[in-house]
Length: 260
Image (cartoon, rainbow, N blue to C red):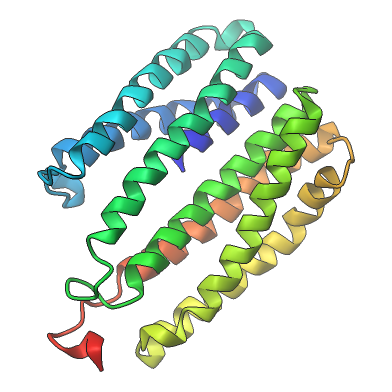
């Protein structure tokens, strides 16, 4: 998510110069991205993450870390020029690097998920649900990044095609999360709370999605659209994050419970 949030916030900060909240978002996303990459491999007591020692996973983390390091340097160069409104060329570089980095991180996530898919360590179905719910946060930022780059006129056909795929995956993933609640056999309290949160996410998306769908279908994003997305994508992200936190808070099942 943070890889796409950085690309989105840098683009919007250039498109809406002088917006202090966007400048703050760039800095906060940059700081969290760096610390998260370090925690992924070395662990972090603050977030309860142990150092990764699995020999099968380390090469994938190393590859993602290498791409992340190069990405950070480009972001740093952008931040240094924020006051002077960085060139579109730098934005295009960030945009171009954000997708390979996302792919490398996704490969790592899939392998982490596979370690828990048998239901012995956590509730059966929870690892995929956490992955998809977390991916929804990323997709909300990715589509905002793509819309912003379309506002700059960057590779309209290619970028619009990416936006089309992002929207389709976001919508299908939301439906899969709703369908996946029953198979997890949650208690009534957890099931009701998550279902209500997913409904709230859907209401946010119905409003914001009108802009994305119109641009997906060939419309040019207006300056008002860009400003609405700048604030609306963060509101949607906040609700998506609450959904992830709810999944994270689900109790680990007692021995044998996942098999019932």
